[in-house]
Image (cartoon, rainbow, N blue to C red):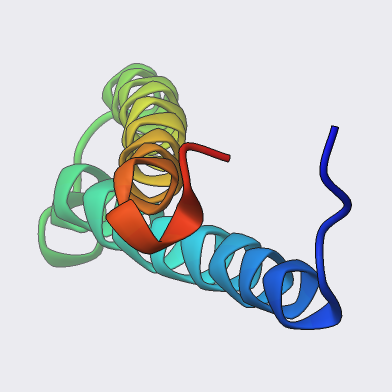
Length: 83
């Protein structure tokens, strides 16, 4: 098995950081899109809870899909030799 160079390890580290930061941003936007209506309107407490739970679930899904998409795209690049 071939050892990875420092440049390879640095590229992987940067890509993981980018995947996490961009997925956090997308998840925050998704949560805000669902729960933001609470700031504009005055829903009942049960509606607030439902929107909060739906926002958290959507944010978690968006986060996982974002990280997966970025990291799988990085792994498929030709310059990575399939690693």
